[in-house]
Length: 233
Image (cartoon, rainbow, N blue to C red; front, side, top):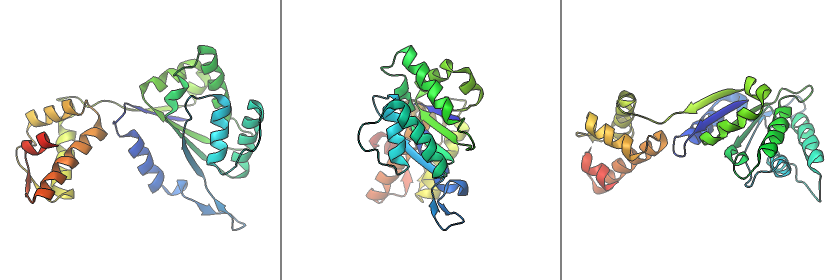
């Protein structure tokens, strides 16, 4: 399993979607019988998150409509069977921090045990990607075996001056390469520091601010982005 963890606006969801859309192993393909196979299934975790709801939501995401009442254990057995039969190799569940909110310790432990079982489907090597805000990391405390089988990728907040070089390159690229404008006084340390602060260290939010400043200038017919452009944004 891979846990992708970051605050809202950090850019984790966009980064995941970008990788899922670009890497060939995630794309639909035809099997030896000419049937279309979807190796990747991605969906948002339900809220509130219960074991039964999670299983039925996953079943619907892979194209299996659940009819009538179904027991929790039946739903999970059916999900594992369908994942194998439909040749799903990658399962991405976003907003997985819902597992922590509103659930007691015993419920979280039970969910951790069940999620771990997804990585142990006989004869089928399923890989699971979980993404969410930092509280999701608490989920790994409840299951040692799951923690040992997982890679954690953190989208840490930006800070000044540690990330000044990265932010300067990002701001310059968006303004010059993407928007075709000139940066006027916006690549200085003071402006970069203010931009990081205004974005609360969230990389995705910072990118949105820069784009907004550039778009405002393009609409007004200007040829350069300056600190006033950011003030208006």
